[in-house]
Amino acid sequence: MGLQNTLRALADPTRREILELLKTGRMSAGELGAHFDMTAAAVSRHLSVLKEADLIRDTRQGKFIIYELNASVLEEILLWLTRLKGETDDAEK
Image (cartoon, rainbow, N blue to C red; front, top):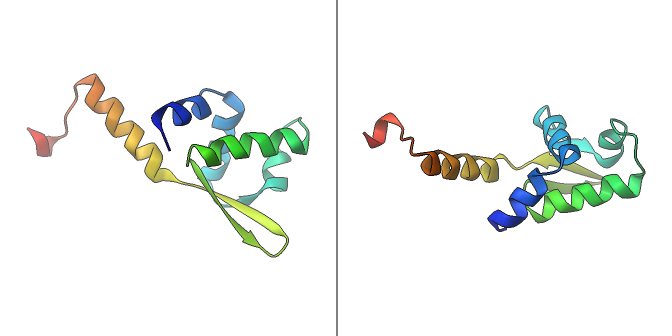
């Protein structure tokens, strides 16, 4: 995973919406796709980009692939942005 891949993945509003949906819990591609007016192939491509950026994880359950949010990558980005902005937490003061 690289920062460039992560930021590219986050730049797309559809992918950000997928992350918002996964914030509520694990979902299959079909469940995620039901929220969008696009083909299954387009949803699959968005999921691939998010997976390449390590923003989501997938596991196979029978014939379904279940996706879940990988919050640790988002936490790393938030820490980097906080440092870039020049903010520190109370423990660093």
